[in-house]
Length: 203
Ligand SMILES: [Zn+2]
Ligand SMILES: [Zn+2]
Image (cartoon, rainbow, N blue to C red; front, side, top):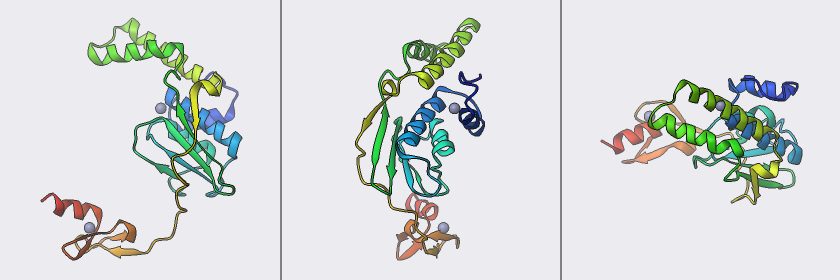
C-alpha cells in the first residue's frame, strides 16, 4: 500500500492525514500541487477552493493547500464531479480543474471491469489480487503522469465565494438552540432552525 515516491515527505503527510493510499487521494495530490505551483499555499483565506466532490481527493486539498472547512476557504458543492476550482483573492487569479475522461490511464479500464464484476457477481481470490494491482497501477499513473493527461483547465463558472463573516445568531423558537441568522427559516410567523423547519414541513 506504499506510495511510489516514498521519499516525498508531503505525500507521506497527506496519506497520514487521509488514512490510506488510494487513486482518489492521488488525484487530490495532483490538483493540490497544481494549485501550489500556480497560486501558492494559503496560510489564511488567501486561496479559496471550491470542490465538487466529497471524496478522498479533498483531503489532499486541505492538507497541502491549506484550504479547510474550519477556515471557510474550502467550499463543497455536491455535484459528484472530480472538479476543483481555486481562487486567489489578491489578484483574482482562478482556474477550475476537471478530470479528463480517461485520466486513470491504461489500467483504469481493467480496474473498472473488476469493480463491475465485484458488484455483480463477486471476485475470485486471483481477481482480488488483480484488483489491488490495478488500483496500485492507477494510483501510480495518476501521481506520475503529465498533469495535462489528468485535468482539463477551465474558467471557473462564477466569482469567488464571499469571505467568511461573523454572523449574528438567533434562537430557534421550537428547540431553543442558537442558530446563525442566515440559516434561520420562517414558518407560521416563527423563526425556526433547519431541522425544526423540516420537521414541521413534512408533518
Ligand atoms: Zn481514499
Ligand atoms: Zn430548532
